[in-house]
Length: 266
Image 1 (spheres, rainbow, N blue to C red):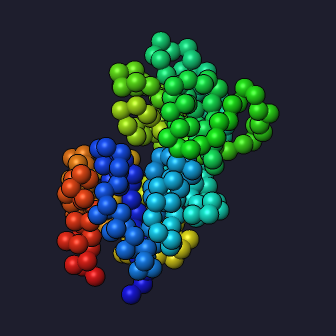
Image 2 (image 1 turned 60 degrees about the vertical axis):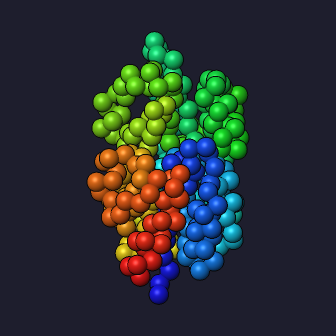
């Protein structure tokens, strides 16, 4: 049997509502790795924020699909793929939103860093949650040709809900709401699904052997395009395109899907 690739979203998929990983979920993913399968986490997070979850599992073929597919790393941090944005776009968007009456911040992820012009509670939060390093663009003499993975427009739910991204940016780039707090901007063809396809190409896994797990809109295409499993807590749109709808994350939906769907179609 050829090697398979299992790709997991984090929040609402691996991590439950209390920000923990159920022991049954942990054991199910560890068993995949022990059997020689490849496991990836696909997240909007930068590499250190993904690696801290991969580190919880046993040794094996582990990969990080970061910034919603803009960059891919192996577990040791070797960059396997990047399709970045020009840092000039971050500067342009930051200046635009600084004029807004909404209390928003615009920042970026790349490699191990959170890049920003304004340090606030959003930057503090991202540095803490992702074990990332600060990259203060006011103090660092960076190259104007520098590439970043993705831009994030962050704010409290009410301000974020009112946020409008300019049409010319929406036309040129891939814009997606990743949560009630954040809007992400990546290159036009970049998505978690494109990251899954690129990783499968790199490690030589056939599309029929790819299984994806998720719950939110930024998981939509990777659920639709592969053997997608929607969590029981997934959005309606995600469930509609899934090959299988499993139990809620709090009810160990990953374990249930492996036992009652994946293991039955081998």
